[in-house]
Image (cartoon, each protein chain N blue to C red):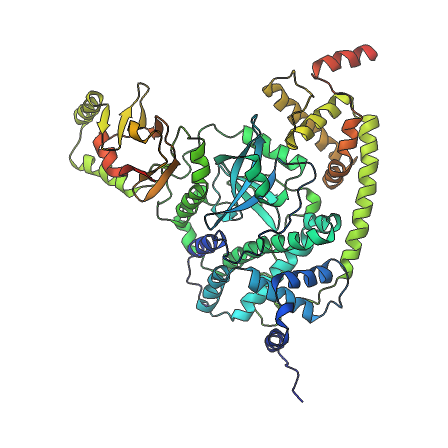
Length: 283
Length: 308
């Protein structure tokens, strides 16, 4: 018997089909039970722009809104920073770094699938406490085009609008998270030029001299502590905009004055702009 | 007179052709499935299984099923066999999921149909994924980084929050790699009677949980009941008046220690995790009403000592 299909590719297709909301949604208007008294640890799903967003409620905020974590049934795509919890029909993956805020109204509009028991939720919180504050470099050796990367990018895309609402300091940029051939090619190009220590010094010196790079929509800059930031032009600060990095939408909402892009890359800012192709488009 | 079809597939096709349209809608099918599996109201024959098969086909969005069928075709498996294997897996998950059973017992009739619908829909996604896992080529996995690999049973890779041991860890369906034969993938007749046992077990659990609640009220120091009740409030999204003078870091430590104390109770056979869960759902609210609100853990410790 021939088994010639790549499992991860097939699983990715299944995942993509599973998040597509049916046009004739028979769940619509169906009353679903609320868990008895417990809200945190509740797994819910709602339909947003034709797609199903599955999440777990992680904490209640002081203003009554809820901190939620993106969840998925597709545990085969899990990495070491994900938390795996028992749920309806099997295990579920929770990405502690893909988090967003939902209002109470939005939470109650979602369909509740199940809720972790009090002890399971406590175990989840204890595990969460042990997580590093910054995501580990777990995706570095995963190709941007691989099913694992495409799954993760889709998961972040599903939560993009909600993540953008709170205007996160840090943009989640797939090209900087996953193995991005373009970056490696640039690095190899420098190596091919026979770049020695003095060249490297000159390059860094050149960047020191040019800590800002202006584009028609934004400025890329390096902060005093060496962080790479994106500063949208003032005209966009009161408008709903999309920010793109190449083919990926990385923000959708009213931009902050400044976004943290990531660690400083070893290239001049002009090169970074060229590689990432960052642009801001008002909606 | 028409002959009765002899193969499973032909009997299914014949049933599918004969069933009136109003009886083959997903919501009607799910009512029948509930009656067959949870209510002990049907004969448990082949028709019950056909209904589950039909539901799997309908509730699995066309695209999801398409990928399973694509793989089935490419590897030479008959579509009907893939359909049966996924249905068996779904059936296995329905009967093994303790939470689903509890919901079926606890929810009012009009709500448990809709809940069952949603639950089975998720189980179908899981089963489609498991079917692919067992049938598509996994050699290509080697190309991925070790970080990407995850073993849910050993906990290698991602952090795994275990379920209560009573729930069991085996969430694979009732079929495995050896189930290649046309007939071996067919399930035994659905036996609704086994769910009557579940009702009895649930009644037993309620009794054990009630006894355990009594134990907590009598034997657990009120400082620890206070910690448990604070966490209960917190998980319910309420602003708890308990432990308000403790820092976040202290609260976290207290909750961790409370978790350890629960483990000790389980280790000493005072309760099981399942009984603890039922106690939380049924009796903790009442226990907390009877537990004084304490703003700190330490102050009470002093009072308790002076009382001692």
